[in-house]
Image (cartoon, rainbow, N blue to C red; front, side, top):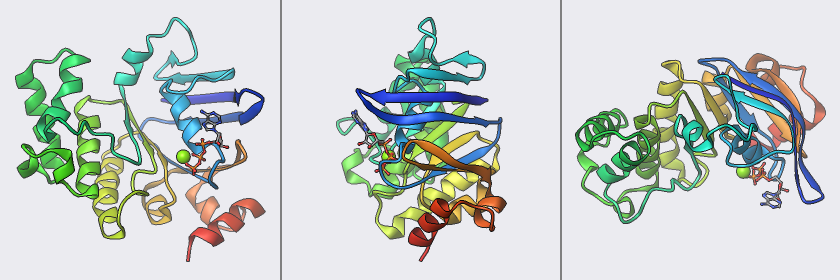
Length: 241
Ligand SMILES: Nc1ncnc2c1ncn2[C@@H]1O[C@H](COP(=O)(O)OP(=O)(O)OP(=O)(O)O)[C@@H](O)[C@H]1O
Ligand SMILES: [Mg+2]
């Protein structure tokens, strides 16, 4: 589904990604972790063309992301992305947040978009909140709306960039539960997170990055087992208390 081959990227003289390769099969859940500044966000943003790269190749469902002929907005519409800070439209109600992209980008009728949006809002347990504005919801609720909004676009894969790291601890699980459900239903997911409980439960693969390099790319059993690199071991020791 997602194929990343020998991708390198520079910001000016600074190399942020060095020869990164990995592939994500349909239905796989890949967790990306590593220290701050190691290039995790940059890597997943290259997958839907939010960040250009200078070397290598990325294909999503057979479509080349780096090919100038590729219609990136069309591709992006098919890949759901959920960020740390929810990025809901503050001046629109929850229902309008859910339908806007479907209507503007996918050309759905308001009726169809509303039906689909509310189906996913119900799925994340927030149907009763549809007439509120984002500012009237908690962080965990806003993030669940952001996930419902992404799902309403019928994505072929979902990218998450630290979806729970801006949340108060008691709200983390309500978001992770939604993500675990998605994973168990077979959604293809790339998830930047340091929630190792989530990784243990649903990840097929774990990528550990350091200084723009994919240092580890292995199964979770290997990752949590004994074969990992010193750098990954040090990192894990710091985040698992
Ligand atoms: N627009 C930019 N211009 C220049 N350098 C950038 C830019 N965006 C990111 N960087 C640098 O690239 C490196 C990787 O950043 P990135 O955001 O991908 O790291 P990260 O692993 O997601 O970190 P964090 O855990 O803090 O989110 C960092 O050193 C960062 O300072
Ligand atoms: Mg980041």
